[in-house]
Image (tube, rainbow, N blue to C red; front, side, top):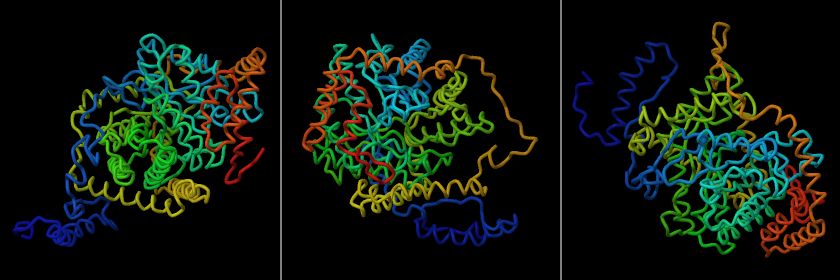
Length: 589
């Protein structure tokens, strides 16, 4: 029989020849027997990764090219209380679950509740849209949005109140902080710097991450204020200020997840992220920052975001390899720590994949993401909680289930006991090579415009994401992409399983209803009692600094924040100097 004959050599060429025989003699009859047009699956072998070289392509964890993992070992503590998608561990100072709502006092009360229930991580702050877009809460553009999608921060007094729970053994130099804010990132960092000064904390000890990824905002998320080039000037200034005064603070947290959520393909997610990372490194190096100082403070918040487990695992492996090669070979970094792609989490389900229909299914989806994260070299955190799609703020039941799922994957399934367990898999190595090649093609397209800034100004990256978003929506509508309980398995006999929610909601509904009026009252009272002359003086000094391309605006912003100038007032001055960007047009006030 054919199966019994000697195969001889098992090199890629021999395997390819045998594959042809197998497809004709074994696979084709099976496909015909089941009356299929084509097989619904595929078998991978050495002919799918013919040039695979372990030391060149994978290596050991914590060593170039970091395919097998960014670190040789990691002390994961998956499912730690209040940590969300960011795994904690011994010796790590990290922020917790992304959160924020209402006024700073409301969010501070939430933090106090989480600390009381066992959270030891620092704040991972979600800001409301007016704050992210540089408007004060009493601006007409802010009407109806104050404290809704995050916490309202108008002044340093709000910021101070936000951090009230973080003192003593959770003092700001003992925890990490994350701030998901981009266009006004310089203002938030200035507030943190002043908070340390006020508390007598050495700012050189502060650890945290401003997102500061303004390029991604132009491509997908949309909370930009100023045109691309002045925006990159602010990035430059913040890089220079932090590397000098806050050396442990990360300078940017890039990443493709927001672009993925907006519609980007997997290749665009990674390719655009690498291209943006190149633009940030070029900006810092051109400003005179040593590449080994800068690269070690550049982070990425997330890549990926789908239920396709193996492609998402390969995506993470390819991302680490691409970044290592970029920093070492293109920028000439010498310190191996500079070559590491630093991000808090790996593969995940993608929050946008959470469904309103049969929401408890989202827990299953989150577990798939947690498994993929563990297999891609990170902690098995299972996020988001199942009620992600049901409104702002998760139930305590949802968070408990999410945290327990991660604990089960670590302590019962023991997924964190091996590093890169899929290394050497013909399938995963082939997928990793394919993911890298596809992403490099995207990078080359961006660089044909002179880099990310030029590609954004030309509309290339935004249009590419928009086209992909349309294709993804069409795939859902036509059924090409199946989502259980949404466009498939929706007949009357299917059951919508419910979970009893008995705990108090984390985000109080009454606080949400009254947040805007309370914030406006606080802001009005602040304007009445602050020193108006000092406000005018510092804003004028900021304008002068902004008008001088060679000046760094951050010290002037620090002075404005100290004088209790508001976020909106500071951004208004910068709008006057830089102009405002609206869908490809620069508006000058």
